[in-house]
Image (cartoon, rainbow, N blue to C red; front, top):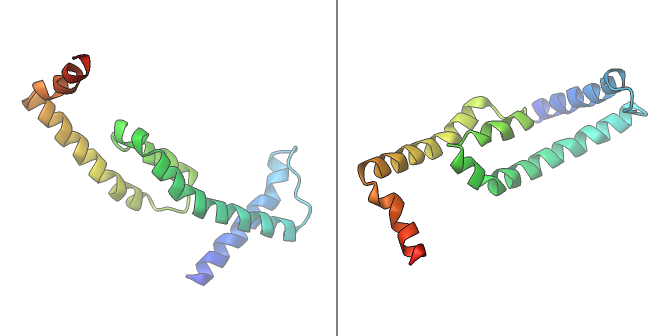
Length: 117
């Protein structure tokens, strides 16, 4: 586990060192700077991603859970199987909701009738 973490950290630092060759406006002074930047990016990813998933929950529900794939694209180290398992409850909840509205159309008009007075 720790070995894998160190390998990922080193690969990220090497990628940061290669970045100035791909994007000329980016500058990385040394390997030490790349290591620090890779560490900070890893910490931000591990702290911000769960918060981002929580804050985008309404968008996730509306899009049948597909927005989680967008978040997963931003967090490359999370396996797709884990994302898929996380999306399935939202998908089945939406299928249930659609099934209820098809079976009982009055459900979709109940709240607007109450709000309209």
